[in-house]
Each structure stands twice: as structure tokens, then as C-alpha cells.
Image 1 (tube, one colour):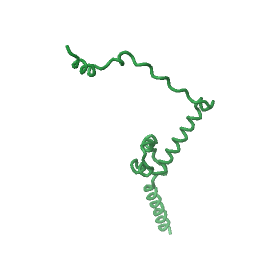
Image 2 (cartoon, one colour; image 1 turned 120 degrees about the vertical axis):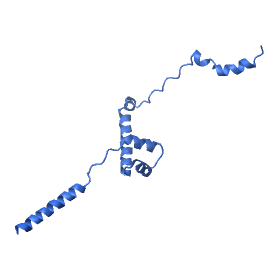
Image 3 (cartoon, rainbow, N blue to C red; image 1 turned 180 degrees about the vertical axis):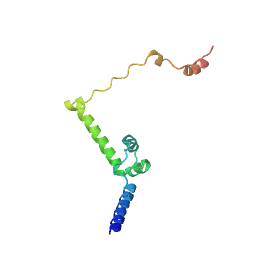
Image 4 (cartoon, one colour; image 1 turned 90 degrees about the vertical axis):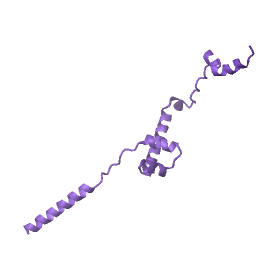
Amino acid sequence: MKKFALAAASAMLLTTVAFTATARPAYAAKVDCDAVMNEVNSGKHAKEIAKDLNISTSSVYRCKRHAKEAAKAATKSSPYAKSGKEAPMAPAMAAPSSAMGAPSPAMAAPAAAASPK
């Protein structure tokens, strides 16, 4: 009877160790959502992105959802969004400087060659 109990305990221990060694971790690897969003913005579909980056399509959708939430949070925290006013326009570009107004030497050369001396 003792031999049978010892054999059964050994078999259970061996089975437990074998299943523990082959079990995969339950956590997922970190997904680079910046890379995913670059692909999304370039017009690729979720399946293509998932295949290219070796991730699941649900990870692609999760990154899209997080980006949407971040954009919404950024809009809500804007002082213009709180007041209901539009953001001011960027100032107009200043007049070109005198260096910018002068023609380049390459452009001046054909004019000089055409004039009679």
C-alpha cells in the first residue's frame, strides 16, 4: 500500500511540474501604440497592422480606443473648449526680409547675360 501511495504522489507531482513548465504566461506583451497609430494613420486596416506588427487585432482596436480617449481628454482640458470659444489663429507670416526679396545669383545670371554691353 505504501508503494502505491508513493507512486501516485510521484505521478501527481510529475504531472504538476510538466503542466507548469509548459504553461504560457497570462499577461500580454506591451504593444507600441505609437507604431500602431502610425500604421492606422497611413490608411492600413486592422488585420494588416496586426499581421505586420505581430499583434492581435484587438490590440489594434485597443490602441485606437486609447488614442480617441486621449484626444477627447486633451480637447476637454483645453481652455478654449471650456469657454466655448475657438482657438486664435496663428499670426500672419511677417513680410519677407530684404535678403529674401533679392533674386538668387542663379536667377540674376541669365538676365546679366542677356543685357548688351
